[in-house]
Amino acid sequence: MKKNLLRFLIGFVLYLPLSGMAQDSSRIRISLLTCTPGNELYSIFGHSALRVVDSNSVTDIVYNYGTFNFGDEGFYIKFIRGKLRYYLNVERFEDFKAVYQYENRGITEQVLQLNQAEKVALQRALIENLKEENKYYQYDFFFDNCTTRLRDLITKYKSPQPHLPAVRPEQMRFREAIHEYLNKGNQQWSKWGIDVLLGARTDRVMTAAEQQFLPDNLMMALDAAKNPVVVKESLQLYEPQPAAQQKKWFTPMLTFSLLLAVFVILQVGFHKKFPLLIAGMDGLLFFLTGILGILLVFMWVATDHSMTKSNYNLLWAWPAHAVISFFISSHRAWVRQYFLWTAIGGLLLLCAWYFLPQQLNISLLPFVILLIYRAAVRYKNNE
Image 1 (cartoon, helix red, strand yellow):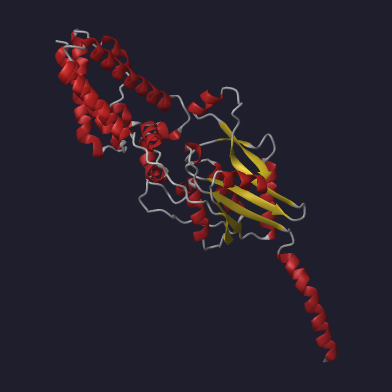
Image 2 (cartoon, rainbow, N blue to C red; image 1 turned 45 degrees about the vertical axis):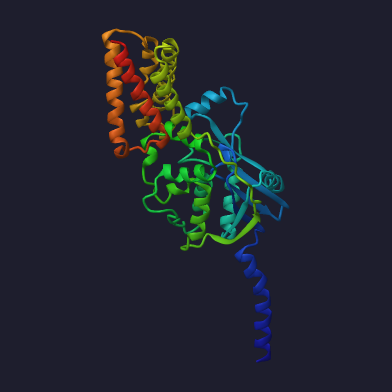
């Protein structure tokens, strides 16, 4: 009896360290870092990165898919055409943290629930992706960015593959999702510009997976995943300090409303005194609107941006306006007809405003009314 008990105790003591080693002897911890939005447009949607702490090599490294090279040849052309390549970069965690603390941006760490084999496989995949021939990728803000890349790695090497649930309302659209951040950051001009450039595809309802292009959504989805559990624990590494937000008075709505008022005042009170000035302003108005229309056509047909296609802003930003601006005071019949159809088209757009497949920025209303007004005036004056 005593011999059997002794054998049991010896076996039990020997089993404990062996079982612990079988469970995980990698001494690796992998975490998802989610950073809160910054004040600039490039940082307004937050950021994601992977942290790998390896006690064997005594390293604490952050893997970041959100880097690009300003010195890349043809940088601005590639950026506009959607051909700019982003790449995977690494930095020390302390350096990473210092930058976000300096910018007063919060950092949340989610330690991933991975076994030894999964940790080793994920770490090897990151190291493999760091190679020069592997680290570059074609960035897409909505479908292939610094957050979705990490999501794909986590779900690939976590077994069984987790199902990440939807964390936003069922009928939420891409445009609504980005509006939340732009409104919260008081980025009204950026919101206007984005709404003008992005077409009807941005108004499609997001799937659960598509919601995860935003760092906050991926963080919440990982927390919500239960079969299997993905997050072991969550830690707040840095809490941002409250910052006063300045009120911006010159919003697009106010600016375009004032512009409309200026044209009305000049036309009503000074059209006989300053006809050349008013004609010049009309010419500039239609020329700039036409140039914007040309840009929208270019973004539709000549770039790799998936969300700039099918842009209904072309219903008011006609590229032909850039040409008609040089005939602003012409009495030719075709010029008058052009202004007539511009006014009619603008009125039809106002009637269909809330029924279009694409949500147009509400601050465009006074600008569209201005185009209708000036087109009607030109049609009448050019008799």
